[in-house]
Length: 236
Image 1 (tube, one colour):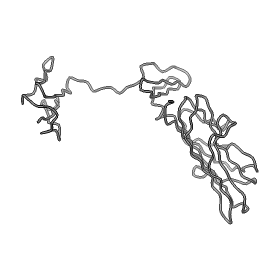
Image 2 (cartoon, one colour):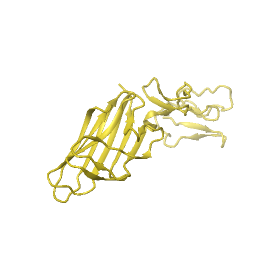
Image 3 (cartoon, helix red, strand yellow):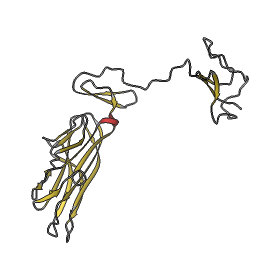
Image 4 (tube, helix red, strand yellow):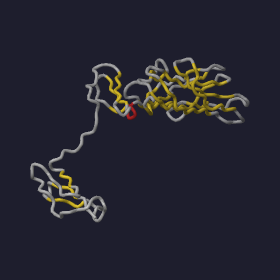
């Protein structure tokens, strides 16, 4: 039976690792800890000692390449993890920073019987500017999987028997995911939501679209007409 200990320089002694006493990590042949001040530590056969006073903690990994000074830049490490940098910023894992959330704040009337890109006009969070308010789309900075969520709600109860639909377009033309189709009824305000994981190439654009059978104002605000975009995984 064995026990694991680590050297605490502040207390100048070896400390028993809680819960390790009597465990079968190794067979201890000597109860005397090695001298932590010795140039080379030689733990006795079958015992493991960790000297934190002379062994520096392992530094977190960051890409060895200096981030380029301009543009959106991507680095893929040996494990397939993608890292992102913009205009010389420090490398960050793409899954941590490639995110955007936008919503419609100003009053807006959805055109009748036409698929229309929802014109979000307010950025809730978009540190690196992936979403273009002017162009009404999110641009993918690297190849990989992206999660898109969106919702639109009509701002009044329309005539019974009409319908509201939502889709996601990629590159402004083809529908890549279909959402809810909600039929109107007596006194209800239809809601159409959509959520999909999509594979994209670098530079693709993603846009939530909506369709209603008659021209009608929508409900606006961060809780009623929004979209969010998230990079969720490497290509492969």
